[in-house]
Amino acid sequence: MVFSSTIDRVDWNTRLVSGDAIAEITRLKAGDGGPTSVGGATLAGAAMRAGLIDEYALATHPVLVGGGTPFFTALDSWVNLDLVETRTFPGGVVLTRYETRR
Image (cartoon, rainbow, N blue to C red):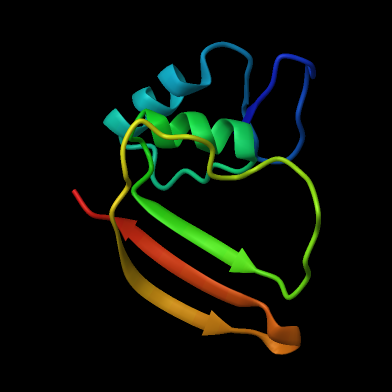
């Protein structure tokens, strides 16, 4: 699923949503839509603030950058997490998965 107000079509097994992304994610979670992945700092931040994320998968790459869009923007309250998996890949990439503690 792609949430965008600037594109008019998508390929493969993707659905385009141009309306309220948070309302659509809420609708999908209420139904039997299966797992949904959210990527991109702006959309993920909005989903975090709405309390819609059940699991976080963070890939840490061994590179330092001096700019960009912060992934975790200001939140109204803390998000408590439980670590469920840690994996290390060649080249030093580390994947950590957390579940939201409710």
